[in-house]
Image (cartoon, rainbow, N blue to C red):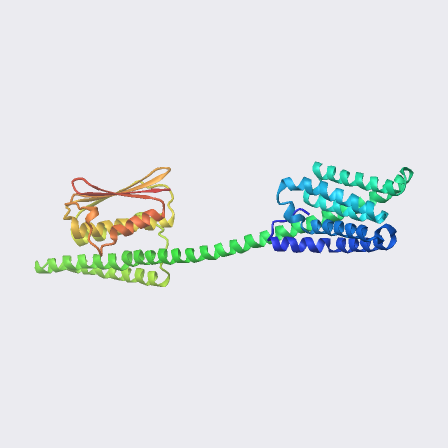
Length: 394
């Protein structure tokens, strides 16, 4: 039989089960030949006949190990055919003509398949079978051999083919089960990795949201309170009242943003980015007294994540300018075309070294992460101040 791709023990077990019935038939034919052939009642004839039968059956049971080496297949086929011929001749039993050769034909179909070599091997065994039969009877009786052998060969061929298909189907099912088990294990590992990455990404998002709500809001309030304190020292009460009113409005907005961030860590969609930017710039100018020129020619529709990124980036940049830049003028420009949105925030301050930002300052890191998440690019230039450039694909 053609060995399936299973463990050697499993292959041999299936093979022995397949040939158990064949072995019982051979034993029956052996006993019948001993009983019916007087020549086999002689001691040495009986010993020779028995040894040949044992060798023949033993080779059947060892066929899987033998055919592992391709060059041994031909020797096995020729040797088993000659053994069958001698055994059948000694037995003088026509039943041996069909039992031994049919077993060999079925076995050959098993490990060679319906191929050129398989057909030649089957013809070899049929020729020996016909020769044995003619020796027992005569040439005129060959027609009876033919009428008997055709249905037997068809039955054996169909049985072996169906058996092999069943073995292959089981082999494929086992291979599929192993693949499914491996895939299930990989999915479990992937799920664990995704969970870890999701947790890490969520932690980063939480840090950004808290920074963009609480940190920016409180920083703006501090700026306005410092401005109010400075005006109080100069007795500019009307200006102080306006700044405090603006600070109260910003404090309420910051509180609302903080509550939303804590509830679901999501900002609501921004219906009008231009109005939101103008409001932030107005707060910045009122708190710092630094004029800010704002220009926007954005006409393309923008998705909410892009709007939020632009608003947060501009707010953070203005906060940094108020704290560190010592600038006298600021400009915010937004330009768009069919493919990209370009945001530029420029000041004429003292500039800074982006590679030397002290720990604990996460504003620029937050901008960079937000821009990266929407596949944009972020660039910092120091030229008579600082220029932040953000390019986002639309």
